[in-house]
Length: 633
Image (cartoon, rainbow, N blue to C red; front, side, top):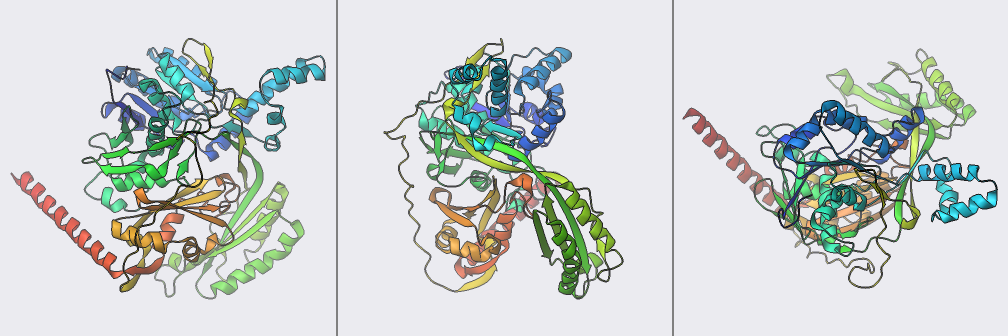
């Protein structure tokens, strides 16, 4: 990596927000403009379960195979442009992926120095310990050997280990930094935090240490903005029509961050790519899958309530002011395990008497369900129908039955019973698709272990294995977290006339999953809207607007610098996305549901919104006329 003196700004781009993201993004980012490092985030809770199943079938797999395909062309492009590549595509087998990349480099004739980071896979560590114990002559000797490893016995005996398919600690960026300092061109990792893909290169580039809390926190925030790719440039954005309209390419480009030595950054994108980088698009991504003011990680705890966002020109947003605190005393571990089998049948109810038709189906299947005793049965009636519909589909409602059980025979019996109703149920009986054989589902659990229980190792390009020690446990001083951060709400708007209208007219939202919980980030479009939102959208009001949150613990966090509220609904997603506990298993659209709900909005805010919209439309009309005039010339 270049020395800070010769390159004060580190340009870090992103080319993947998930396993399955746009394949040509890596080439687009390598050729679209200057970069120092290109990152790719391929891992999520569900992805670890998928990779775990891959590894069961073939122990040599367990990594993101599409990444290898991207490198067919990407290796040469990265070498030509002098760009380092850092990706967590190693999944459950970073060593195996590093070997495949080395083979690919030889085949395409592009020399590449490859490093990788390992130690996050706690089940692999446990298997190695078990193998050593089997070779020991006596149980006492094996026990002493295990203690000598420096790994607490409690790790092997932890309750979450039983039945686990995968168990991976979230590592920080220090291992990545070691590989880059040793001259690696490509670094692949297993389970690191998403932000570590940015903190690692920044540590190597600027020479930061564990005590550089504020710069590290700034890099964590930049990494969180980049980690989901195009979600920072207009993808999945509440006001998508402002950034993905007829005047711009329909697909947003991928983001990059220009990071400075103090941890501040400018978020931008390559020229000519779609979408936009605005304070709004960056705010939306900052709120995604976070909770309160403190965003803890193995490198540092970033204070999200200190983040400042300011426009810095077209498609440029400056991020600064971020304060850091010491990392927490434990590392998070993501645990996945097989949950059982899931069966779903959707009955189509058309025309009149929809409620009565739904009751009949349920009554006809009750005896089968009662005899089989499935572990879980869920019925849901979606009234997608409307009266006097000119199109049959618009006259139809959907009755969904979901059955879960560990015994696959239970689902087969229910499936057969549904088919047998074909000529014996409600008028117009049909189902949305033939009942399938059922699909296996998984569950996710978060556990926590001491950092010293994890063997974080950087494997350098020359094969040397460098242990990465966790930051020392520290208390006292400015970096110590003390209590919940104080929050000052803005003054409320003066009382005035209101009108019933969707909440989304004055606020954006982005929601997502974190284990079995859902987060809903809501931000105001202006200061007036913030003064109203901060006082109006309380936890009781959220429960009224989203009745499905009833029965769950809901937390509200206030982020005044972002004019935002962040709600966490604990348990809404059951045992995580892989369990598919609800219609929207990742809570991706809960925020848009909230925005669609009607509330009493102050007329003053609606008037301000109309004036802003009219000014924007007038500006766009003028720009269109000017463009046409230039074309005619």
